[in-house]
Length: 191
Image 1 (cartoon, rainbow, N blue to C red):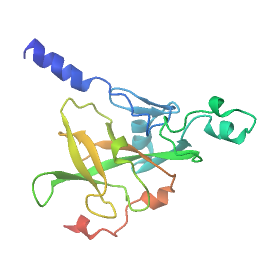
Image 2 (image 1 turned 60 degrees about the horizontal axis):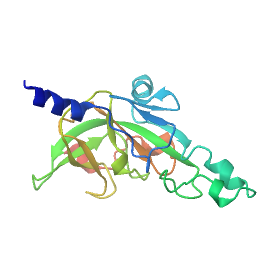
Image 3 (image 1 turned 90 degrees about the vertical axis):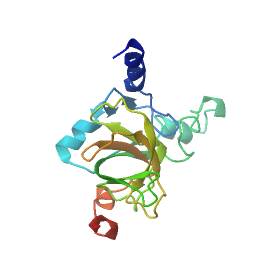
Image 4 (image 1 turned 120 degrees about the vertical axis):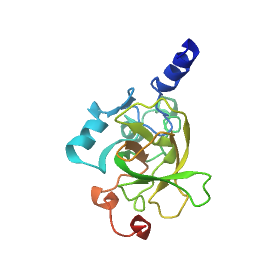
């Protein structure tokens, strides 16, 4: 292994920052985990199983600033920069387990099947990240299923993603755990 190979691998493995357009300020990324308000998401998934969800404020202090009409607009937090929709106070972090990685029918790409139903929520594909282990492999675009329509949700994930891996992602609006638990609605699971 050459020095250049080692440096290139280190560059891929190093901690990748969270995209603050989607992730709230209370979320912190580590090398192989994600903590939200000080709680490890991979530890939560091991403790309660997947899928699991954590509801949190979309932007810390956004509600207080929006409810105080005495504050001038300049003193209010920039909700657009933090990825929040004005007036939206809460979002949810979901942790789901990868069940299957399969090539698509055309063979040009692949799909990742999760143990969470994405029909009843609005996942942000660009916020999906691998937790529970670190990966030094390059990323590529995967379709994420089950979703209401094929090809609706896409995420940049490491090439070496495999069944049993954990993915954490943001849902725009909080949902009940019941709404994302697996159902038999998707006949594709039987194939």
